[in-house]
Length: 527
Ligand SMILES: Cc1ncc(COP(=O)(O)O)c(C=O)c1O
Image (cartoon, rainbow, N blue to C red; front, side):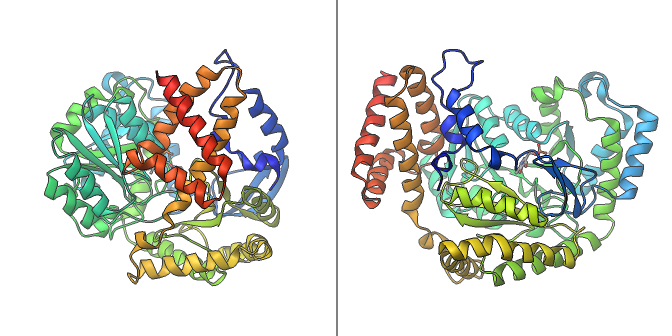
């Protein structure tokens, strides 16, 4: 691994500079050294999102099979959707020019709300001009200081940031684990106002919520649930109503059903559905709704058509699921580790080799496959991955081409590096787990995450020791350390011991000393 590849974006969150407008100079050096890899970010799409399309990366245009866009039903370039958007543009002009509360609401926006009420089965729906802003805003609307929000530990950042902005207390439970949720709810039983937040399909892992079991736990504790169906709306359920419908549950099984318009709907923005009283209240208490311009009418026109196409029959979903099965079978036969995915989103987990992550991503791109790398801190440092989004617009021939490129690039590289057998074993364990033959959590290597955290903290200890602005750096680390692992640990008091054990497992004596330095500095910083 090259020396810059041992660092990730998480390392440069911290800075020694005296002025917030001056970014850390070492970030600039790292960026320059890794320029070849950074070229993978912000590629330019040369037209509407299509399954095969042209993109510009590193100044060069290429035709690629696109497995990166969340266009799950393939509606982004659908002629009827485009026509509907054009009609709305011609009638309503370019912008809503006001917040929905004052002057941004049109009859078209209202029509979309009504259609979404009929679609979701909830009493009322409100629209947001952003997906991220809608998730974040909804939580700031319902939570207050002193409340407790209990989130699945793989929840999207917009939900985590929403809780933080609301100044509510944030606690996590282990991903998709009803027993862990039960434990948190039991331990926090004395708190008066609690809310559980989960997702329909988790975007980094592609697994869907074990909704009936999780809801049973919440019901037993009398705690309400908000579900983020960003990746599951229109894709899951007989009529596309999401994971709630997939499990045959009534809409009222969840207190709030939120979803974005940026994925299966192929637009931008989001909505939240719930009972009338709650949505009426939220219209006044979500600042990102009351104090932000409404969705552009052309988008609303297109959304209405996307909703109609996604619900008038099941043909798009049937094509999507046939494609999902085709891709899964092909990727599994290559020995790729697809984690616990059981949706149209697949991680291809390659382990901790960051250099390989980027090198193979470029090789795939050059060969005609567009896949994005997913790096720490978005995912754990030992499970770096590519993420695949299969859509209804792909044909088997596109997916076969993508599988061939995967075989020629990343599979070959993993075989050469000796990591393919490990991936194969993990894939077999995941498959057995999916088929109910293994209990998932017993099979996880519990200490590997702590080993990654241990290495990360050791790097920070060195940086603190060499820092010219120790005080700022320690304060930053203390807040990030809290966010990253104290909050996430089911047993925060045991975190230090787990880290020390991880160093011992790594047989890394200096690591223990480095960790002690961090702990002492953090204590001094807080004092
Ligand atoms: C689960 C989840 N919620 C919310 C969002 C935010 O949605 P948007 O991209 O539409 O802002 C995303 C984005 O990827 C997501 O994955």
